[in-house]
Image 1 (tube, rainbow, N blue to C red):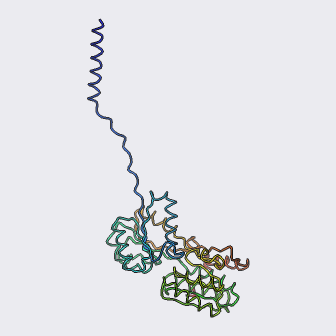
Image 2: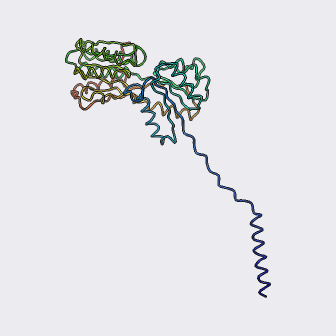
Image 3: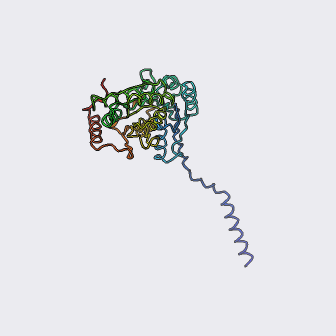
Length: 339
C-alpha cells in the first residue's frame, strides 16, 4: 500500500514539473524610458561672472534649470569670452550639430552668423539678442529674438542721478553706440534732462565692449569735468567703477546688479531678468513653435527691474519721483526716449 502511494506522489510531482516547464515565461512589466533633458547651449562675448551682459543671461538659465528640477531636466552648456565673431559662429554651429535643442547666441554681433546657420538645423531653436529680427522675412522659422527696452530703466536712473547730483554734471561711459547700450544711454540722458533742465550730461563712447582701460579713461575724463554721478554699459564698466570708487563719484549700474563692485558708491541698478523669455521659448518649443517670436524686456513685464543699494541712501522724495516715473513709463504717459 505504501509503495502504491509513493508511486502516485512521484507521478504528481513529475506532472507538476512538466507543466511548469511548458508554461510560457512571464511577460516583464514594461518600464517607461526616462525623459531626456532639454539641452540648452549659450555662446557669450564675455564671462559668466562679468557682472553685466553675459552674467545676466547665464544666471537666468541656471534659475530656470533649478525651477525645472536640475540638470536631469535641463542641461546647460556654454562658451564664454567669444568676442571674436568667427569663433562664436563655430561654437554656435558645433552646439547645433551636437543636437542641442536651443542654442542662444547672446550678442547682437552674432546675428549674421545665426541667420546663416539656423537654416542648416531646422529642428534646432536658435535665439539671439539684443535684437528684434527673427529673420522670418528670409523664410527662417527657428529663430527667436530678444531685446531689453533699456531706455526705460535708463530714464529712471537718469532721473535719480540728476536729482542727486551736487555738481549738476553727469558722466556716461558708453561702449559701442548700438543696441541696448545706445538706448540705455539715450534714455538715461533724456530722463536726467527731463528731471532737471539745467543738468549737463556728458556722453563718451569708447568703441569697445571689452576694453576696461578705455572705460576707466572715460570715467577719469568725466570726473575731471565735474561729473559726480556716473553710469555706463557693457562688461568693461569695471574700469569705470574702479575710477569712481577712487575719486568718490557715485555709480548707476546697468544690465546686472553691480553693487558688489562698489558697495559704497553704487546707488541703484537696472537689472535684466531673462527668465520669463527663457521659459516662454521652452514652452513654445515643446508646443511645436521653434522660433519666429521677438521678445521685449520691459518694466511692465518684469524683464527690467530697478534695484537700489541700501548702503547708499537715496532721499525719500527722489525715490518717490522715481516710482512716479516708473508708473508713467508703464502706463505710457512717459516716453523714455526723445525720438
